[in-house]
Length: 401
Ligand code: ARG
Image (cartoon, helix red, strand yellow):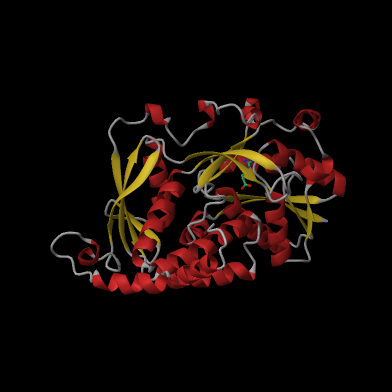
């Protein structure tokens, strides 16, 4: 039997290489998916081979991730529960796809991942794998073995598994170019402010520059294509914006979120580019669409965020929502300038050939072209049903509520 394991090089997935080989008398093939930002890929590959993996793949997917996962999510302005840009959630369907591809190429009958039974990621992986190849068995060692962290360390020592250098770190971290997530340790005490040490992409707002900075993001049909006038590939733009906005302390999120499986958990995220681009995209989209489209889309956008969070990336609903979003993006061309200062990114200027803002309609100055007389009749009809209702109530001597 051959098992393809999603491998990060950390404690749990390293233990899993040995544990799966022993428990299932299987050959283990590891897959490390490079979404940008992962260091020491060669060392991770070598470590898997040293642990006895028969093959260790490293698959670069950064551009695919940016263009086919982050971009449709940006078109939907997705923020789970209004705050979380969904970096981890968006990466899971792509990792699942890579796992399935490698399993098919390697002739494996099962795939394995390192998720516990308490989180969302197990759902995202398994729903995606089942959608892409329902014949593959899925094994979740961490869910089966119920090792505590101490027991995993003991197992590692007994089996000559080198422990990661950062083992002293009490935090569980997941990261890709769209954001970083930090869990565990002292963060599980929701009454405590997170220690500064957990943040790695963002400067503390207190220590950030005392003068504001500005950034201008150019969009073409909903896709960010330039930063301060310079054309950039999407993944590169995200990376450069992470560095810039991070310097101003932008992108820190601390919230208690609802996991799909029913647990409320305290989550800390850093997503400087995610926060800035979502703000900019939403603003430009709203400027170039009639209000009724924007208001209706907000309902769909919330649905999109839930669907991604809940692991339903490969659902027909996402396809259908993408088709709607694609149609709306046709006008989302132009540029948005944001002011970056002490943890806050605020839109301060907009330009677009599709802008529906009309100075002559909005102004109170002499150039005003709006016909104020038309408002009177409009209000009369607009309020007619409410007025009629109250007249009937009054007639019946019922109290006004
Ligand atoms: N709560 C987030 C989510 O469900 C992030 C989980 C990331 N995992 C981690 N070990 N930090 O998408």
